[in-house]
Length: 82
Image 1 (cartoon, rainbow, N blue to C red):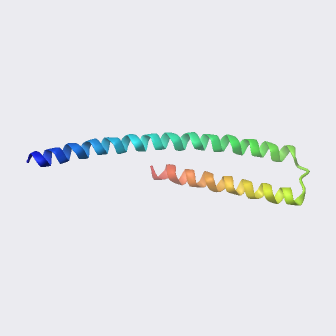
Image 2: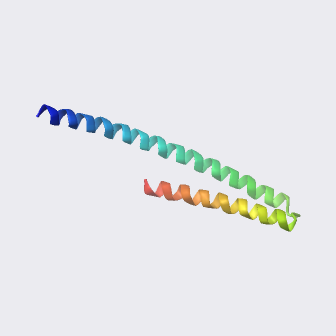
Image 3: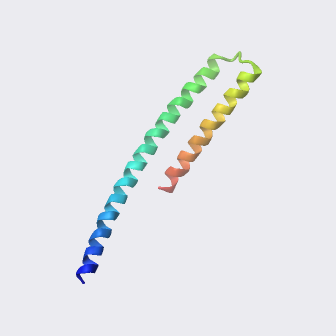
């Protein structure tokens, strides 16, 4: 019986630690999403400001933007799982 009580207490302690870790992860994801949004806005501003890009520059910029969009989508999926 004492062994079961110790196991139960250990599981409660572990559960609390996991909950705390999950909360920290959610906060970190929210912070990263905010940073991503800010960077996306900066990119949009730069695109507007530099409308005279060469074809190669436009292609490189499109790839970067697509990479950012993938990261944003990944973060959103992680948030939706919570």
